Length: 285
Image (cartoon, rainbow, N blue to C red):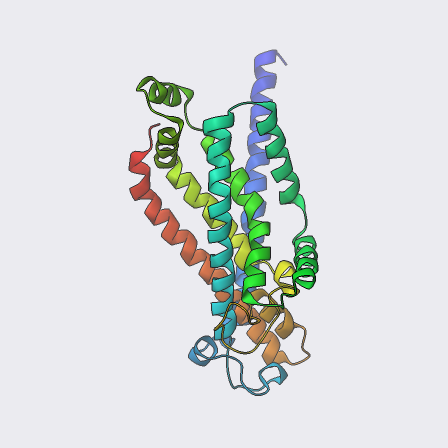
C-alpha cells in the first residue's frame, strides 16, 4: 500500500467515524425526545398549562398545573441572562478593543474557563452562604443573582470566541479610518451580533434548565411569582418533585413538564435562528 492509498484509507476511516458519532448523537437525542413525548403528552392539558398547583397536586389530584413553574423559570433565566449580558459584554469588548492579545487576556480567559467548569451546585452553595451573610431569604432576586454567576462564564467565553473570528484586516481598516477604540466596539457589535445572540441562547438554555443553583437560593412555592423578594418555582425543580412521588399520575405530569421545558427551548432556538437571517446581513465575511 503506497502513501496515497494509505491517506485515502485514513480519510474514509475518519469520515465513517464522524458519521457514526453524528448518528449516535442524533439517536440519543431522538430517544430522549421520543421518551418525553410518549410519557408526557398524555398529561398535557390546558388546565396544567394555565393554572398553578392546587390542593393535592403532588398527591395525584387533578386540580391545578405548572403555570407558576413556567413563569418562574422564564423570570429566573431571563433575569439572569440579562444580568450576565450586562456584565459580560463589556468584559469581552475590553479584552478585544483595549487589551488585545496579551498575557493578561489569556489569564482572564483561563479564569472564565475555570468558572465554566465549576458545578452549578457549588454556585448554589456559594449563593446560599452569601444570602446568610447579608440576611437575604430564598427569593427570585437571589435565584437571578446566583444563576447569573452560572451563565456569566458561558456568555463571556462564547462571545470571546465569536469576537476572535473578526478578520484582522477589518480591525486594521477600521483603525485606518481614524476611529477610536470605543467606535471600534460598535463595529465589533455589528459584525458579531448573530454569534452574540447564539451565546445568549446558550446561556439562557443553561439557565432555564438548571436546578442545582436555584434549589437553595430561589426556593420553591406553589404561588405565582409576584415579587423579587419572595420564593419562586422553576420547571426543573417542579419536574424533580413530581418524578419523586410514588403516584403514576404525578410522574406522568413530570414528563409533561419536561416536554413543556423542551418545547420552550426549541421555540426560542427557532426564533433565534429566524432572526439571525436578518442580522447576518451586516456581517463581513
